[in-house]
Length: 470
Image (cartoon, rainbow, N blue to C red; front, side, top):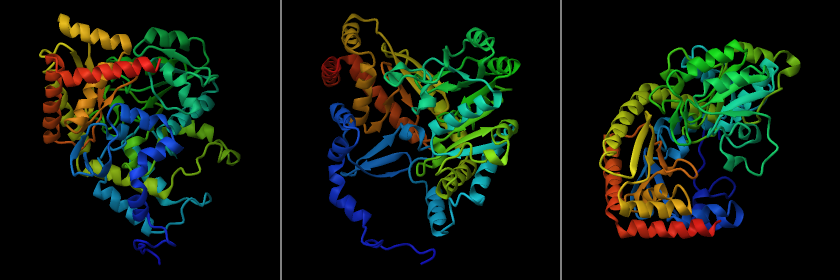
């Protein structure tokens, strides 16, 4: 029936609710048997093997009705939190509309409308390609830059993360992700902020583009002031392109619609977005670029499908993206990210002088890095050394675990072998959420610095696990 919704138990006998009720309790066993078997093993080791049954906004709940504060946002996907009613309504509406989607030989309105809305926030850019993820958005930018310039090489930054498909992996600055997947594309790594290295590579005349995160997700390190503008000038002088990877930093995360807007005069040739554009529902990625680049790639009707994606521009993803941008404008989400980010970062930074092992709080908007370091007092230093000898990054993990298990706050370590916790909560968090996190974090720091046995006993468990994995 057109526009109608199926009843529970309909759909030819398929009943999703019944299936989840019957088999949902097997979730960890199913993953261990059929998917990545190391994931349930890791979650059980650190006590993260929870069973969450419901979610809304910046919170989710377990089977016992306990609520958890989400400071991870699905690695940035849940920019509006979980199950925003406007996005949910848009998806119900687009399903009920029964559109003739993905015929491949027509032009549906939703992709054009979403491109128009995205470009209204990016006035120096002209066109959009829609894919299905952040790594696809980066892959598109790499291909377009190479074709448009006729050059093969891409420059990227040490410690960068741009995705895990082969092209994106070639510009991934972290060896742990690259190991065992060679040969990769012939790209070159420089240090974030190193203009001399950038210029040296550009002089070779074979560079198509430089791809950069304005704030690196790994470690939460921002490009030095003035670097992006100076890099852009160097690149254009050598007829190369600037690619801004805003997959995590874009759509309000840093208190601006794009992170590069924090530096006046920066106008990337290609911009990659994804994650929050999905509304947390339908995977989507977008590569925005200048008209001349698209004109070169799609230079004739013979090349109309030279770069495409089977599910790109699907109606559900486009509807979710339009709803997300509507909510961001109507509910002033970017301004909230800036205000709550300033509040949270300021309150955490005020604790640096109180705790020896808390070394720095940095970031912008609601992308915050909390870095720990070697304490000065002898007793704490011996415990710190024990952890570092086993594996760098264990202290940060020691903080993450009690935040979840005792305070019901989900956080993440910012990268392998890093003593940094990264906070990337939904952009709709409020002052109550900030109060809750700061209070819990202070209690964990008090225990760590006071020699609390529970926390350091867990540290010894992590040490045994790290040594056993060598």
